[in-house]
Amino acid sequence: MAGNLRLETACKAGALAGRLSIALGRGRGETLSGRVILALDSKAISKLSSDRDILLVSGTNGKTTSTKNLATILREFAGEGVSTSESGANMPAGIAALLAQNPRNRFAVIECDEMYVPEMYRKLSPKVVVLLNLSRDQLHRTGEVRKVAALWHETFIKDDVTIVIDRDDPFLEYAVTNAGHVMRVSFSGRRHPDAATCPNCAAILDWSKGDYLCPCGLGSLFPDIRADKRLNGPQRNTVLVVEAARLMGAEISVTEADDLISSAPDRIHDFLVSGKKVPTHLAKNPESWRQALGDVTADQVLLSVNARGIDGRDTSWLWDIDYSNLIGKKVICTGERQLDIAYRLRVQGVEVSTASNFSQAVQSFPSGPIQAIVSYTAFQDLLATELGINKSGSQ
Ligand SMILES: [Zn+2]
Image (tube, rainbow, N blue to C red; front, side, top):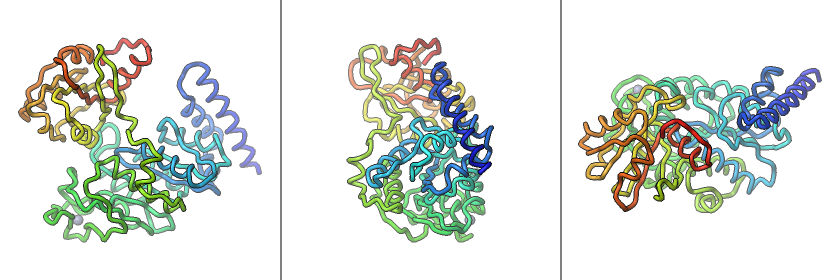
């Protein structure tokens, strides 16, 4: 009883702090609200998640969209309330706030930052975990991909939780080696760009047959589900999300899910700049750049790289990406680190020029379609300009 009173007080104080934060124009209030809740009751996350069906979503790319999609599917089929974060908050404070908001909702679909998966797995006791993918991220964010895989390997120990994974990803297979129940979805094998060597023993992986195999025994296991090999990253994530929803009783196919969920990821937006429509991808690590580059069909391409705050100062990850499909196109680089990306492209034989800002780059192109790929803060700057928020920072 004393514990419940503490929780109740913590949640009321958290809600008040959240409202104050919004009223003072300090953002959506989730993080502050969650911090207050956890300061007053350190066990709030465990308490708020008990007696509820929790689904946890993590991975390097597509967490926010996949979480939103899974919540949408469950809302449609469960006929009951589903809690989730609308803003992509994926650390303990944000998670505490979203759980406190509607404590009677049976379902909660929770996005989790890779490094917090062990803690949240322990505290939330999820029914289902969806591990979308693991690939190299920027070093300031989660460190080496092997570090995350090893952390997860220690986390998923035999129990009743079902873990849904892309079975073609050796890092995920290593992460769930000791797990009790794993649902493996295969997209018919594809070489993982960061997995030349085994996540378990560091021996060279044999990828010669499309699947992978290591002398230590780590290899592609027989899949529970075989999906279309032609799917791209976001589409693969949708298949995994649908399988997770089906585990919770939602009778839905991937085709039906496509009608229900947003097909366009949040990280693609058409900006109107200097009178021209510029479809723009937000890309923040090697894999999301690969996906964005795969979608480039225009002959005029604008790339903007910053190294500010959430972007991280270390741009060495730009060298992990193959830019060969930009060869022969007109490419303009801008942003604070325009020289970093321009030099990388020149090494690969891509002809590039630079511009002092996004708008000037757009104006430098002759008529015809333009596509852009931009880093996190560059995307934020473009959104702020669109919303009429005056920002002095360059794009
Ligand atoms: Zn091995």
